[in-house]
Length: 93
Image (cartoon, rainbow, N blue to C red):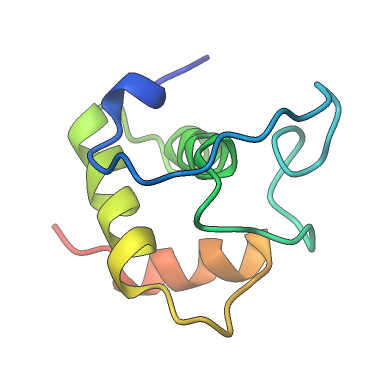
C-alpha cells in the first residue's frame, strides 16, 4: 500500500538513483540498512513503511516526517532503524 509518493514530497533537492527492486534500501522493513536522506527513493520508501507501521493515513503526516528528515536529522543517524527511532521520538502533532 502506497500512502506517500514522490509527488507528495515538499522538497525538490533529492537525488533519484535507480535501485534494484529487491534492494534493502527501498524494500523490506527498516533495519540496519544504511539510509541516505538525500536520496528521494529512500526517503519515500522509509516514510511509507513508517506510515504503515504506525498506522498514519494522511500525506501531511508524511510531509512532517520528510521535513524532520530533511531539516533536522542528525548526521550521525545513518541506519534505517535509527531514523525510525529518531522520528518516533521527534515527531510531534
